[in-house]
Amino acid sequence: MRYNYISNLGKYFRLTKYPPVFIGGKNEILIDKNGSKYLDFACGSGTSVLGHQNNFIIKNLTKVVNRGFIHSGPHFLSSDHYKFFNELSNFLDKRFSIFNLATNGTEATETALKLAFHHTNKRKIIYFEGSYHGRTGYALSSSGMKGINNNFFTNTNFIECKFNSIEDFKKKFIKHKKDLAAVIIEPIQATSGFIFSESKFLKEIRRITTNHNKLLIFDEVWTGFGKTGFDFGYNYYKIKPDILILGKSLACGLPLGLVAFTKKINHNFPGAQSSTFQGNIIAINLSLFFLKYIKKIKYLDKIENISINMKTEMKKLEKFKFVKKIRGVGFMWGIEIDTKYFENPDYTNLIRYNLLKNKLITWECGKNSNVIGLIPPIIIPTSSIKKAFNIILKTFNKINIKI
Image (cartoon, rainbow, N blue to C red):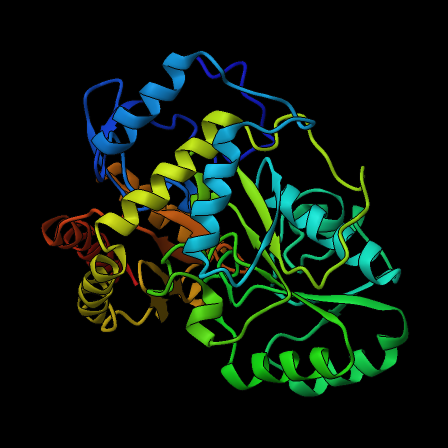
């Protein structure tokens, strides 16, 4: 296989110069061109949470594709859009009544921030250290995890606060509240390695923003749709934001983002945000079928079972001295590696490479890429969870001998 045409701007070659080339999959399994089978514990960066080749999705989506009506553009709606909005509104228990479609989570973040600017006619945003909201414009400016883009995305209107520090938040809030449009936060920071907001911290932010009539934005691109064991992170923490950002698993593998908010927010600003492929008919139908399917299978019960099994298997890893911390809930878990035991600061990805060689796909996260992310699909059987952890134990035992 030739890789000559592939840019190095992405992460295709992060683990190996010759990454596997996949041709198909079934449930929690991905199959490469050589016929090798891999356990998928990354789910396309947390998107393909129903696994692969789901019959319910394929059957219903085939009907949509066969109609030959794929896209209506950003200026027109179809009857499919209204069906989707109605289903999503019901899924959200009608807590959010207005929706704006986007192509992905990053674009939805851009939309949410622009909505906050226009609604308040103010220009400052508070965000948090360790956050990740996307890789473009305002989304990157409001991210603590800017990576190698750090020097190019500086904006004095975006104020960074320490995560889980009520004192720092109050200090920055008081200083900038006159021109503050909104506070944006991930209830649980996934890219940083599954760092949880402290409940008191999040409640205090909600109290302060409410008392001072400031908008609170929850970026639930990652935590949405069961990853916490609840429908959303705001259910997990029992705190309702003013604006909700959704993406990733929203369309179960196809590009789709969305901003949800209430009628109290003025959104009469035509042209503030629009993009060619927002609300693509194939993507919204896939999301519609996804919502119907997870309701049908009582998905939160399945996720509770996954969470119990993951927690049990994770305990077996606590004996390794290079395992610094294990964090997780629902079907999103991270193993933080203590890199002080290794000369190579990027040793975690060498571990992930060895897991990949043993046919286990994991997700890269952590502030220094030092967390092994495990996100299995919600249809995964207990036997496959055990198989995945047998691979991890075998790999970790080999490392343990060397240090």
